[in-house]
Image 1 (cartoon, rainbow, N blue to C red):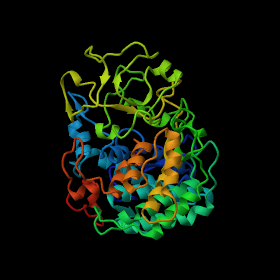
Image 2: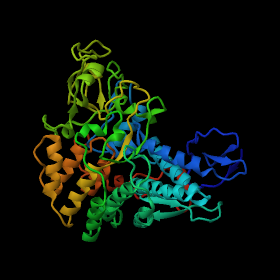
Image 3: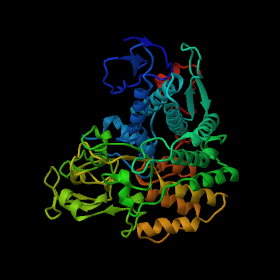
Length: 505
């Protein structure tokens, strides 16, 4: 085993095991990233590609990219509950826009995204098969898109450049241009999406990410990250063209997308695959991060939604909660947002908290809770229906791209100057949800995106594009400094002389 200075600038990366067991493979550590090699010392591109796919699981969990995308908005909050969930204020800092360059979740997200992009480069530059290289180029575009969205700068190393040199750095406009050019270059070579398995890079996923890139191009090319933003009509029509090229259809039920065996949903464009009894991709966090300790599934009594966000849903909205006899029998309570008295499995015996008080969730919530409401303050939520057969290693796939999102991107592009009818899209989504269609305005589309895509990892991206991210809101009663539109470059990464700290940090 040897250490080489291969990825200078991606620092303190977690060691990632490729999970390949074979007698003719050796593991080489490259700046903290474990790379599986063949007996001759060449990179095992197949195993490295598997690891790059497994990196998609970093969009799951409760921290890192996921917390930065959701908890920084009006959708999610991680309050301190007595001695629980303080973590030196880490979760409260994300929600209140008071983070700094040494924030642990900022560092974790940076390292995760760039280490996975690096694995893709290893496949591309070390003799991967044609199919492997095409998939790696798509995955690299996905990881780079998220880097530019969160941090505004993307370190990269040109193929063949000296390994001792600092990586070069794309700024926001350059980075999104690269992402678009890569996706358009590989689009026609990618395979069609496989029915019942959206976990492999595919044409529909490339169209989705192209639509996302063109929709946000006005944000990424603005003189100031905080705007104002100009959305070119040509870019908006590119959004529409790419959405129209997607072959997916809406699932008959919203909750088919989040139930066990959700791989069968016609709506999922791209996902991270999980198998029951495997490692589960940490999908259990989707119900444990919010549920109380005494619920089934038992949880960590952490995250909640904010009252103003929850109030955007009517009681008739089928996306707010989901209940079936088996869900009540197994868990006692519906899936989705949970307010009011919680019950044991079967749904009849009321639960109590650890202090023997009724376990009644309320909308009232403060950033630091205490007293009788210590364990009950805040509406809780779990969007993925737990897999009753294996709560710890479930069969639910992690949804990364969904056709309903694509339709809403198209509606927004039309509202920003593209061609088509916004109202038709709003009617389609409203019919499935059982509600009145949202207004065909930008404000109506933004609110509808919040209802349709709650806790799916897009709220920050949306809030910035709609000019809502910095504004005062519940639990953050002030306008944030414009620097918080971007996260800081982690302090340890700045030994790369080509990286400069984002303004204001």
